[in-house]
Length: 74
Image (tube, rainbow, N blue to C red; front, side, top):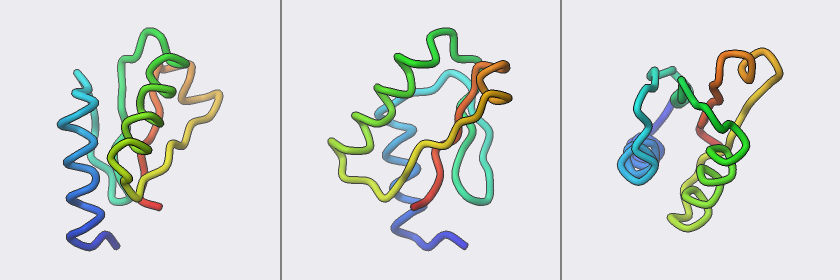
């Protein structure tokens, strides 16, 4: 389960990335409705690295079909 630090990391990510649509998950968030998935995933990785967040990107071909990816606790 997430502790306060990782929950804060998710909040920092949301504030910086500003996703238009996302769903809270027990292990992070699912970012939805992305038109340019590669660009968004790269930007998400930059945000995580720049802010030194303990988060990782998870995505699959099935998620790509729906224009989504997950940002989960590391």
